[in-house]
Image (cartoon, rainbow, N blue to C red):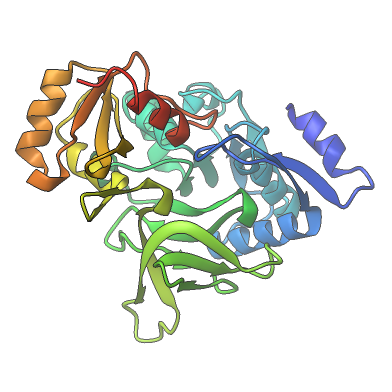
Length: 333
């Protein structure tokens, strides 16, 4: 979708906009969302970041998904000057042609990583006053590099149903944290299964029970009365193997500093253990096995390894977990 097509839809008489989910845990599905709630979400973010009319914002993500659409709505709500570039792995390569300082940008982790590899793009990235990153995991190495930035870099938490993010955590500077702080109009709690429950009435009419396993904690400040939260992984990605509950994302985090080729933790049914851990890798299976046996606790070792030509990803670059499970059932060694 082009920006003109989105603006045409935004300005038509309908109170709704069409969006689709990312498809990270299944087939992408279309949704109708209210324009008034999108405006409310935009206002909340703009207020939190202190954006002012005339500030410059970079649109470098696809308008087929909520993250791109919301960048346009934030610009409309606050009167921002929107710089539009074709979505790519190097958004600042094009933006470098315009030397206007960027007040605000939203990117996925791959775009940030790529930008850091090119000195000119890295410098421009560091000059962005507020950079928000969503749509995928931020690994430890990337987080460590972003912590040195003097301007504000944020990791977002949200989903299509919440019209982009409802909480942020700081990645840069002395306030960097693993804990997300919900916006003032948002409250969070935990279900009996320790999954996050979101009440965000301004952007989502219904209480949202997520599949994200989380911890809650009061913030460190003396006036913090509402809980922050930390995401441990998705309930869908819990592997129940021989009586143990193993979180796929946690294993991926432990392996990240040691496996240099693309990989993914998945699972498959097993008659003895119920489910077993399966590692998909684009590299040699023997190398992956050596790393896993050296780094992971014994009872968390994958019991099967599958070489794949490409780790399955969604259109937004997230792991396609359902597709990975299909691959996990094939050609194990």
